[in-house]
Image 1: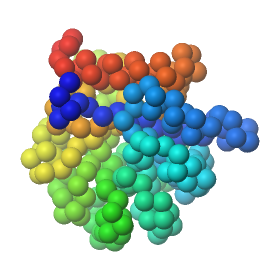
Image 2: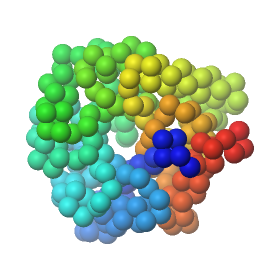
Image 3: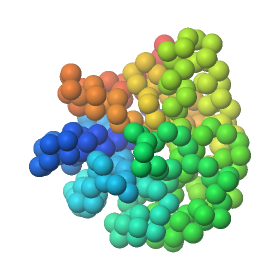
Length: 252
């Protein structure tokens, strides 16, 4: 496949650390998961260092930067502590996400349009350190325009509502896919590199993968869950194949 059309797969390894932390110790090791994902066809590794360190820890970030050749996408809240950690480790990219301690997982995109003044110092500090800045946002034109205003070159569109709509039937699912399509087109027209992620599965990935403006998908929880039954390498390879077939128009 033409590399300009190839859709990159970023594998989020957070929940390998969740399982490790449930019992303490070093097993299972997120670094090993990253190595398996890389060998199975991942193009990058994503890890979210939360304020409460509920899964990924500081040592995990250090080891990933030292021992993984793939680009590291460092998910982070817009706090002084996280900016300091990002600047120290210099990941390939930093994706700014909303974060609330009481949430189980990230529940939606960050309100970039409503937080321009708060986010600008974080975006500027990361960019000055040579880190590619991404904003995790809802597929909404106001948020896309805010990303441009902040100087963030990349956005990751939140696909949570799209994935939840799958169970509601084709009408709801199709409506959410159209919403994503409109956002990807607008983002590309604004000069942004468009990524997407959150909740994607074998059943839902094809629709998003067919959108030509999307350059990267970040997928974690589903792959780690599937790894319990068939192994992480098989899960990554299957996801990689579904993405490639959809991007090539097979089964459209």
